[in-house]
Amino acid sequence: MNQDSWMTAKVGLRLATVATITSSAFLAGKTSAQSFSAPALLLSPTPLLAEQWTTHLGRDRSTVPLNLVASSGFLAFLAQRALRSTNNRWLYAMSSATLLIWVPYSIFFLGPINRKLAGKAAQLRKQYRKRLESQNSSPVVASKVARLEEASSKKNQRSAFDILLSLWTLDLWSLFSDDDETALKVDQNPTPEIAAQDFESVHLLVDQWATLNLGRTLMASLAAGMATWAAIGEM
Image 1 (cartoon, helix red, strand yellow):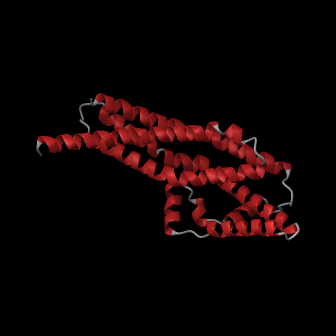
Image 2: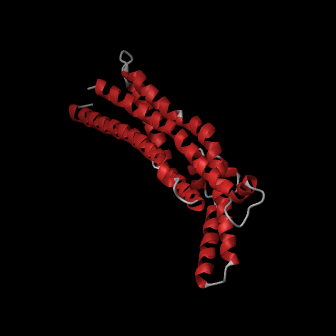
Image 3: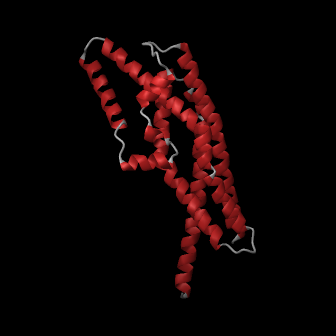
């Protein structure tokens, strides 16, 4: 390998390292923003809060999985190529492992809350649809009902890409369950009006989710910090 090719490869590796550290820092910032924005979300009415949380989780599925996999994989690569005689090898390895801990942490701690909130969101959506249908059949109401039915239909159509996203985000429950079934398990006797217990339940679940989500913030922060320290040590 000539000098120019070696320098090009080195610069490319440095840029990839910077991108990986930035990606890990992005995960830390994103998860912390989710948790610290929860108090503002908790001021919302129960149906709105449930839908906000559902939208929030859906957007995570399009950004977090690839970010997590790419960052962890490249950090493992950096650990493999680092000199054995330095601490950089262990710093990169621990950084990669810290990001991977995100996986079981999400499954065992956030997964149960995700399932309960998904059930509540589906239940509240059904109650809202029933209230609309019980009103006068105006064009506006009919349009709202049609949009709800269309959204529900699209939600139940799972493509191969949807399955991969579900696996990557650890939302394994969505592969085998239906929101309507989950809603029935949450409440066997849904009422037309939102009960006080629904208000307390949804708000409490979102508050718990935001608190436990801080654990993922800590993991991403530690990973970014260790990777940064290792990169500085290589200069």
